[in-house]
Length: 291
Ligand SMILES: Nc1ncnc2c1ncn2[C@@H]1O[C@H](COP(=O)(O)OP(=O)(O)OP(=O)(O)O)[C@@H](O)[C@H]1O
Ligand SMILES: [Mg+2]
Image (cartoon, rainbow, N blue to C red; front, top):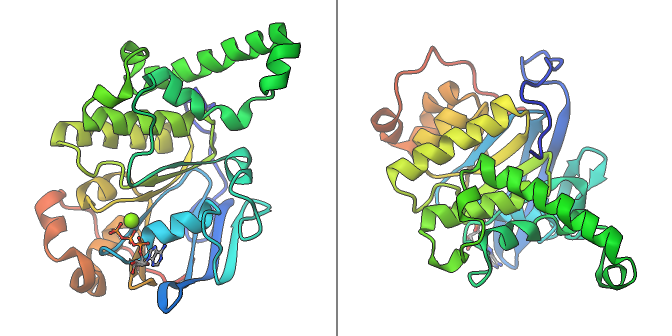
């Protein structure tokens, strides 16, 4: 499995009770597309082993933020650091190599390839042997190939996809294809996983299954996760912290309980959806504007 420990060791906590170690730091991030300001002075952190959810209405800037973190878009201004790496200056190829995996809002799989082949694409950034090496050092490459397949099979097993390893992805149900996309992202052994609307389009059973998987990745395996999702029941279940965006700006940050009770968030985004979809939570903590 890509994330090593089944039970992470206790991590030092900061004064706010969150883990001390910052994995992703976003400060003063602004992104403009011509006259459109997709992100305006956005700041928040993802700490080691935390699951942070990014929520907000359509067009709020969530995918734009993922594109900045993945170095698909260059921010207009601001700071974006993944551990010691300055993401505002990184190439998009450096991002997976540094340990950031991503699933996309619109699936980006090879429909004519099998589940195993699609997941193996995720290993690309970890592969030492290229085409030339394959020709010249085929024995070594074959050993490497076997190791990659074994690692991918572990991921497929975790996601309940192992029985489908040789099935073409194009014919699979939508929810299963979304899990294949997650398998590809996990196959690269990320330490930070970005998930853009992982349960969108899934039926309730598939949603429950994926919610349990995301909780397992964060709580038990210690992966840091940044998840964008409109399904607030899912968000409330998996998130340690929530950042709410509206028109490219952060309007609230805090624990799920605090966000649920924040009037500005209710007005801008939640309405009554949380009451309908989640059980009662303990008394709310303060929301904080601090990242
Ligand atoms: N490549 C682009 N060129 C111009 N404008 C863009 C581009 N990408 C996004 N935008 C604009 O930036 C804003 C933020 O879009 P973004 O896709 O980040 O929103 P989102 O929060 O992910 O929305 P959704 O929940 O619908 O996925 C929107 O006004 C969108 O139209
Ligand atoms: Mg989006």
